[in-house]
Length: 576
Image (cartoon, rainbow, N blue to C red):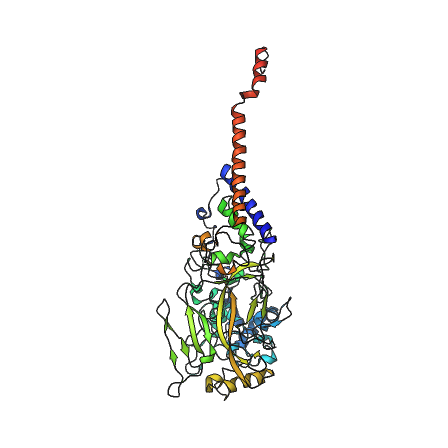
């Protein structure tokens, strides 16, 4: 009954708007005709806004022996910076969900990519915003000089981190075949030059960690890749130099080194918008810049689209696909096939060719089978911003795919919206008796238990479970998994946004949601549809008839008051 009432109310609302526009059209500037806001396209480099030239600071003009020495020099001026960083999610890798109470963060969760951080230090902690986190159970380092200032503030090309040294940068002499966290060949960092180059964070600073999560370029998120270092306008209208030329920090605004935006507790429905007067600094949402009624003008299109914002996330229409621009994303990872050897040696297959011509692995003895995709159509679901993870303590049902993170929300919730996601398909190890997902040790070149060393799952899992102190029966198998990543980057220009027909036709993008909410055009018209059409028609013709009668009444009335004025004139008194 509630659904029927909503459909009737919506039809009536649309009818009123349609009739009013049809009879009293308003000349409004279309969005396509609007010029870009002044200054955005010509925006200078963010580094130009820095108010101190660090190359002039004597304390930075020294031969630093370690990265920690650089941090110590930074703290002589920025006395509170390290304390602030050490209270942030970037540092703790720990998040207590305010509604579910779950203990989350990189240090806790299991994912559909490399599985888990614990037992795989210092490989996984190479992306930590600090130096020397070698054991997850001990928590991040306690010394303020362990904070890595340079990873966020050094100029592009001046700094990097090694891929297996718990966050330390490459310093001379380097070990053979040393790699950075982006997979590039490592070259020694000049710590003094890096320190003297610091400024506001750039896309390069953020991207060297966030674009390469999960083991490679764009592997994890799907909408965060090296393309965003310098994207075309068609790939990302916000980050392109021909668009708004924004940096990550322009949206993920910071206060005391804590950044807005979290994938553990997402602001799925921002009903405040810009929070005028002034600019909001507490969320990373579309509405915080564009407002809650972002489609300008009094056209039927603008009114209808603004009417959608209480049901549909901005990203759903404005990110028609992800993994755009030539860098593919991993869409499936099957760990169960890992460990196969040829002639007693590991091997690989590179059967996926990216659009830029690069060959990507489709099988690795160390990691199993993969599938990749470019220009991927998102998976759509109702989302209220809350995510419940399947942790190692949760009992699972191996007869069906296990949702690593369950996306919550439904159409009856005013805080829920239809959101786009990357759906990651996985196959991961679990305890066949205790029915828990398990941790595994994959990295450890000097151990006899790491999977990448001996390709023995039983040793790998037992070592990791003993490491974290969790129960393990000693029996394992593999279960299908699903993991969901909200898509919110790679916003296309407005002329490439989805059209009405992309959703409001049978078997189109939102077909999987038609059982949860009424969407016109997705099935043949029913009684309620015809009732709505009738209301639209009745309202339209009612307004037209009313306007016509008023016009006829005016046309039959004499000017200046009609007959009464004529009689008055005939009496010789006129209008003087």
